[in-house]
Length: 214
Image (tube, rainbow, N blue to C red; front, side):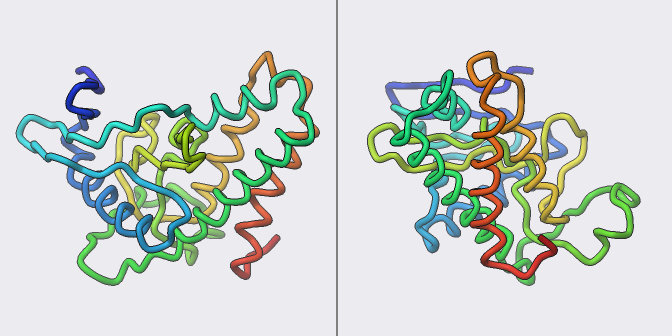
């Protein structure tokens, strides 16, 4: 099954979604769009058309952008200068605040909660359940090269898993993002110290907003 199609003339990104995840991902994307408009910290592509029977959703095509991973590598390649480092720290901080806002979203209304399979997490996470992105990695964040704004895309559990969830421990999103930062890249191989600073900027921006165990 193909995953997506791009129509640059109509400015449409058509995404094909497995049936088991379809309704949940559409609902999450719609909720995230409203959340992005209220917080102004990040943006979410608008849903233009939904075709459940055919298994696809037409989304606003975000042009002139890079994934945050591409953006990071282009600025951190073989070491960032002060201007690049300050820019990256600013983005990581903004994403930390953005994720905190996502996790604050009220789940006590018409959005149907779908959680992880029973026993997926140990008891330490039993009482920590929030609205989650599900696949919050640097590849699922786009940076608009003109406005320098982040778009958060793909509101669904990672394709590594065959279930769908919108409700779970905040550590799911936090650790997915940090892990994606430390993925191997030849051009950032010797930037471990800088990566720890970016991770700290992300986590600090998140932690100062909420009382969690640092």
